[in-house]
Image 1 (cartoon, one colour):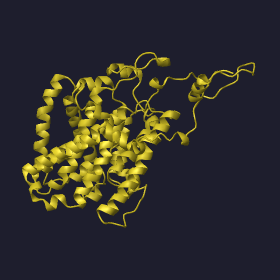
Image 2: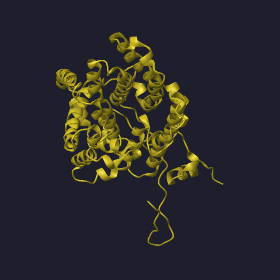
Image 3: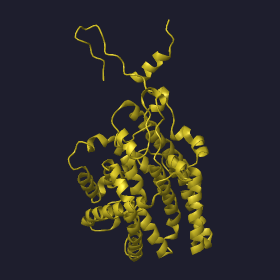
Length: 397
């Protein structure tokens, strides 16, 4: 708000009170009531009380989801020669990114155009997108011996699509809060995108639009929804649901392209009838939501040895891409035939999980924080609260 004059015209309203550093919102989070419902404590004004504590459930879910992402990338070269690997690949791709996106939407519910949140959006999403888009392009030039690989911020390469998608989704959050039927509208947009091959590759808009319903669904989830799926009966029911999903995926593996789960192309680009895009959008959304619920049902609620790694999942996500792509460029799966055996697949699975786990650790976060969470204080104006804080620290006279 701007300062307005009082009726007499000579007194201004006081500047907003300075907030303690421990109470500063580090990014889009649910409001205090939601935090309390999830077991987090919030800092009281002027530094009273303890700072916010992270919810172990969500950190556990993010870590497990990112491990599945890495494992899925490791399985991809094995899917051509193994129907079982293809079935596992399809099931995992049915829920791991949707789960990650739903959590992203849930923690974007409080996002608005407030200055500090816009700054954080730039420093933690936009800047890493630029840095890693350039880094991936140079990596491909070197590792794949492809000097023609362009550097284009409009055409995300490999994993950077998620960053530009998250930027667009989060910026659209205020809009979804005012429309009457947000999830059906997002589904309609995703379905229309799936039958629109002319959208093109700019900003990977197909993925932005087709994954949009999961983000919007996350925006409108409440703490009680997560409590519901973590009930014992849901946990028990999720076992046969996953079993059925694996059987269906095993049947569908030779009959259906796994590219549908990427949400990267239109139906026409997948050589399918145009109308199938709308049907698949709705069907995959329903299947993914069921599998995500089953996944959440088995995520531990308490603090585990890997809970702290949940804060570094974006590090693991972006950094493991160099090894995932490098393994293809350098022909590891082609040169070592034993990787195509069942024991080789098991070993690759554990290696992928171990690598992404290391990449989520605090030492790696500290090493790459300059690229993932740059301060960039010089690039932004100071807001009124920061100015007020500075005045209180300046001695009088």
